[in-house]
Image 1 (cartoon, helix red, strand yellow):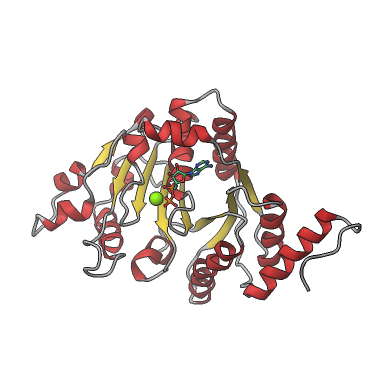
Image 2 (cartoon, rainbow, N blue to C red):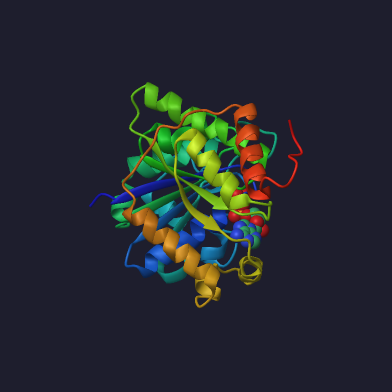
Length: 288
Ligand code: ADP
Ligand code: MG
């Protein structure tokens, strides 16, 4: 059985990729999916809230070995909340070697041993650092593992601009014939004024819809403090409703887009437009 869906979640460091990924994984597992979450960030904390703690990484395990046996791989696949499987690719020590190397290597090994099939995964979520989309970090989409990707942003102008690194990688791969597209933008809100409108306008600018606006909520930290996802720790919260709704939308979403690349000036222009509209005619615009 081949996974029904393989989804990559991209975004810059600290934007909330792992929080989004883990809560979606937890929610999908409750919808009857067999989920496998693959952490592709040297920070290695992708599956921590699913598994209750930081886990050894693929890279660490494999550095001990000359030849990788299937049993070795099984040792770095952990079962977390509600039967979700978690893998952490890991990476070299900071400053030593390409940060994406662990990802490259882990994916090739998982592929060679048919791990997604072996574990009966129906949904695979790649949680990928997208600051620099070098070889390793583009691997989940480059090799055609994930044909759909979501990009996590917030309403800050530089964050939206930085999303270009990822969007350009998608355009480039598409041009070389790789079957990949952006399925949506996830707005993990930071508390910027008019944040929903700004991110919606950004979506229109690049031609990719916003699939969800996720509020900032203290239950995220409270759950994290307990080593849990919001879905596990606060299933009755409004925040859990948002993650469940997003998980459902991702499952149902079949759309993919090749983005337009926006310049910093374009992004600033739409932000100014949104701000002016929100302020109304009575107020003098600050910019121009
Ligand atoms: P990334 O994986 O992109 O590096 P994380 O998912 O680890 O980012 O999130 C970074 C920090 O932001 C975490 O401490 C997390 O608790 C917090 N965070 C993420 N999303 C939210 C949210 N919606 N509300 C409040 N805090 C959040
Ligand atoms: Mg992370």
